[in-house]
Image (cartoon, rainbow, N blue to C red; front, top):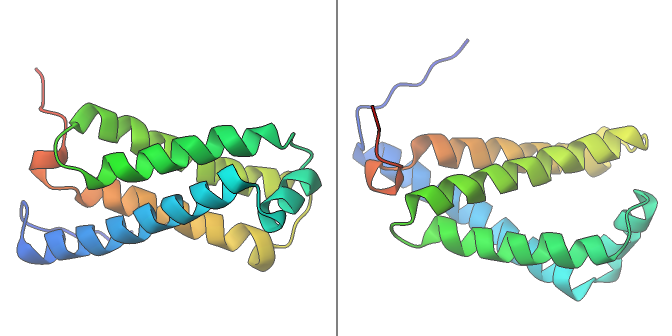
Length: 135
């Protein structure tokens, strides 16, 4: 297994963190907006997955809030919840597409990639954005 080790909060780690976090936040801001507006592209996918369309509003609002939370300073516990929600959302999308037999490259690869980016952003976040260790 490839293991990448960065000393705590090095400049390179922080730069990678912000690039990945910006991508994750942008995806959630755009995706959340599309969900709330129920644009035909996402509505058609939800119908194809056999989900009711009101789920788009619920997921969309949470995506928008999660994007804001991972970008603003402080709020480490809320950030944990936002990252968890994003990970559940994107891995749930992968599972849903697999369940109905959708093609990997057309429907599954993208949410899988975003789930990985969510994990990378979470793993590389600076100490100031982490929950303090208790012990």
